[in-house]
Image 1 (cartoon, rainbow, N blue to C red):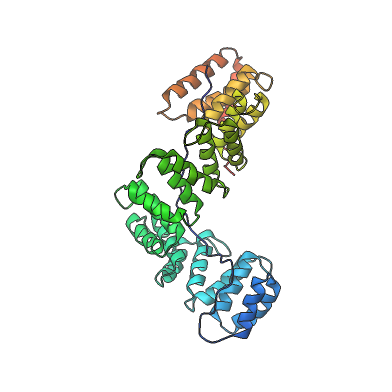
Image 2: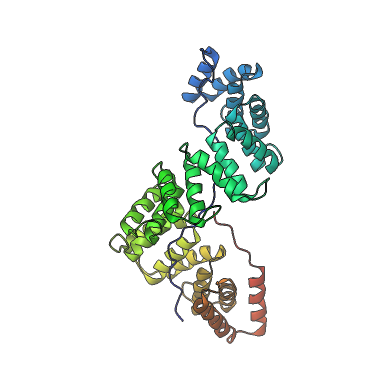
Length: 394
């Protein structure tokens, strides 16, 4: 019985929304100096958050929308004051009601996520729309996301696309990525890989890691661009160096397979480990496989078992199969037919219809294991399989 082989290139894209959590306080919104506000900005920028709060609060209480927004943001982030979402909401609301677009966006986000207020998509949508109609790109992106997901409004890809485009054309990297994703998947528009690549590239060139991974994937697959493993490797590396687990996994796979680079198991192992330690199940499986086979590292069944188990517990069916096989053969631990049956049975039930050979392997191995078990052992193993629940990816 052969073990199942390492996973192929991975690109699980998700549409993204954005909280406008600014890295510095807002600049003055009206002409003329304001010494206290300028002093608050200076205090914030030098990291004296307590002084910034002290200077902002009187201005906010006098109705200065800029100070209200910034004070809300500091309560939101816990800078100079204990983190307090309810107080952040209160200050955001005061500024939002005066038409401050950043405050409207962040207030929408608080309702979107249920921070400091009960989660309420309809109210989130309302605040996002107010800011979006003022041309605020982050609000436009979030409004697009609400339409794409049907949050607080019927799902409407065409409207989502329209809002993403407005933000993307202002240079918003998340909107550019999401617009690319919609073209890639044909959501609200005919599927168009070339246009998807164009938008991914704009976001990727701004350093947005998800776009860099997506662009790398398009080069690896030859979708919308000629297949080019060297370019794929380059974009994966940019995202991987930012800590993106999917990029780290794909970069490891390219080194393992020698795509765009000489085959190098040791380097593949290094990238798989980075992704695996972030909880990426495919990387955990492939790392386990390399220890299992001694690729780029001395063969070590106990370590292989450990990585297979991490992936199996997240629901990776190939890891479940290999873990069950190791228990059946007593590799890396004493033989345990009950656990072998449990994991192989789970694999058989979770492998897709398109993976017929692998599923047949799992069914055959399960039956082989069962032929050497007592009825009581089979009952125990079946109960373990029924009671199993996947652990979420970290």
